[in-house]
Length: 94
Image 1 (cartoon, rainbow, N blue to C red):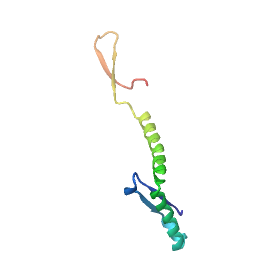
Image 2 (cartoon, rainbow, N blue to C red; image 1 turned 30 degrees about the vertical axis):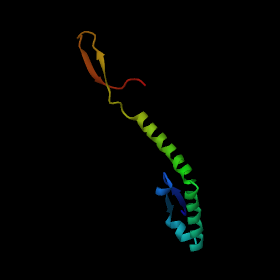
Image 3 (cartoon, one colour; image 1 turned 45 degrees about the vertical axis):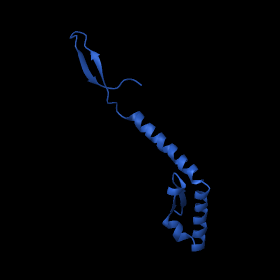
Image 4 (cartoon, rainbow, N blue to C red; image 1 turned 30 degrees about the horizontal axis):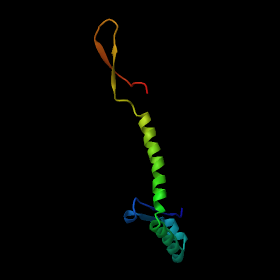
């Protein structure tokens, strides 16, 4: 699939990605037009918006993974007759 995009945190480390499909589908003049458009995105800091937007799904995914991670905590349950606490593995309710 032909595609080109720009990503990065600051102008100094911004990168332009061009797929092989784009290079094969377009003429050299059209590729230059795409690259100049992407270079303009770096110059005007437009790439930062897309970089920031790509972080949102990543954060949501990590939040999802954390919510389903098995709990590693231990809690005490007291047996009614022994008087000594017994360690049981399990999770505290959230």
